[in-house]
Image 1: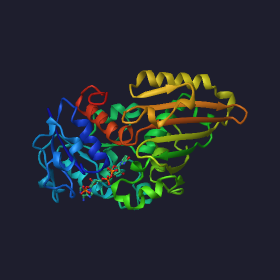
Image 2: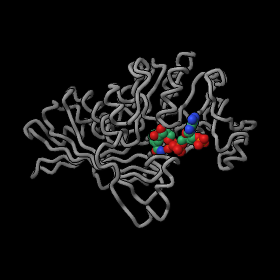
Image 3: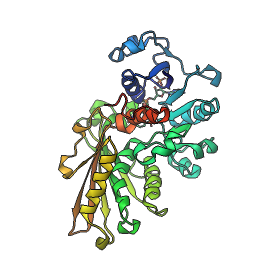
Image 4: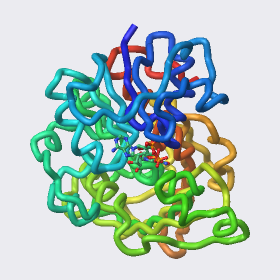
Length: 347
Ligand SMILES: NC(=O)c1ccc[n+]([C@@H]2O[C@H](COP(=O)([O-])OP(=O)(O)OC[C@H]3O[C@@H](n4cnc5c(N)ncnc54)[C@H](OP(=O)(O)O)[C@@H]3O)[C@@H](O)[C@H]2O)c1
């Protein structure tokens, strides 16, 4: 049994982690923190998560010093970026594995991070050691890491559909334009809840952070890496849709050299990817991609259409932002770190 703590266990992603780990046969959750629920048993605070696994487990107040973290094998940080920045390096220093669900360790260039997150990066060494946590693309690095930077939800939806493009030389494509739509649970967590009342989203649909969403540099960094083109760029605009969870991503990708491109070769690349990767599903028809099919699952569904008249490739993908976009992939990363079957507690 591996012992696990969750900082921020009362938030959206923390609760989803608790839900998944209650079915994990190799994990014992030994510590959960929340200022809202401190002192309450899990069963009293969140009755929907009551489970035999969690008998006797109560919320603690967030620790204010590293000595106050109980001994564990791994900590999940389901916390704001600034909180993860403080604790992740200290927990790693203490010898614990850390899976950080915030954005604090995803962007390797500290200057790019500081511009995107409006936060000073106080742990550049930890940043360089962190493994970017998309298992389907970076499994080997994750397996040997002490600190895993769990990917952003929009980033997972985008990168898993862009990855099959790496079967082509990078000059085949122009700059992708990504159009992401998320349910409200993906747009900032409970801390932004005042900005997202029911009446603000019901019968409404809007773009937000049109310039400078913090996931754009993360997606660009990883896209440039697997395309083997450091200069590769892209543009991303998120939208808020009137539902609770789920992301649908549509990427418009100009095909710059059509003579190098064929949709059959791309579909073969996507088929191979989906055959290798349990949680990737490739559909031939983009009309089949919908958030309902991935809700509460760890699957990423991907599909492609090529408009040969305009030399435009359209990639459509869907994930559940709280699952494949956060807690689901975090449990997948835990399984990789400890050598458990990757699908444990996820299927
Ligand atoms: N929502 C998504 O779809 C999603 C997807 C991927 C990644 N993420 C990232 O995951 C992280 C958590 O997001 P969320 O959606 O779960 O947000 P959330 O619902 O607002 O939860 C944030 C959690 O952080 C805790 N927290 C606040 N200040 C803290 C402190 N000083 N020390 C320890 N814990 C503290 C809160 O605890 P209290 O109980 O005390 O309020 C709360 O449980 C964020 O960094 C977010 O960007 C979210």
